[in-house]
Image (cartoon, rainbow, N blue to C red):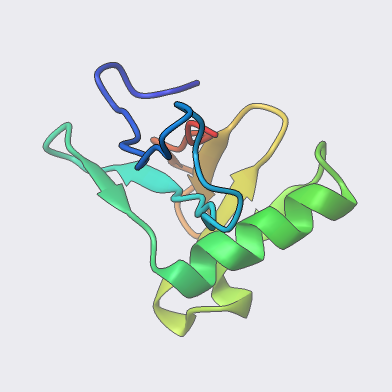
Length: 97
């Protein structure tokens, strides 16, 4: 799922195509209790992407990268974040690519 209204601004060369050396960055976000999307850190985003490459139907243990996120797991199949100690489902989503 992609967040409505999100977009990517890419500088174009004279022919109208993005330059070949432009790096792409994936940003994963979570939905807070106020209904606002908040980005994970770059390290967490990188970890999620690495796990996703290995098993797109598995899960991501966020505490492996950030100790403050140790109670959280992302189920990649449902694209939801779960808090292990309470069992609550929090917002989670696949970013626009």
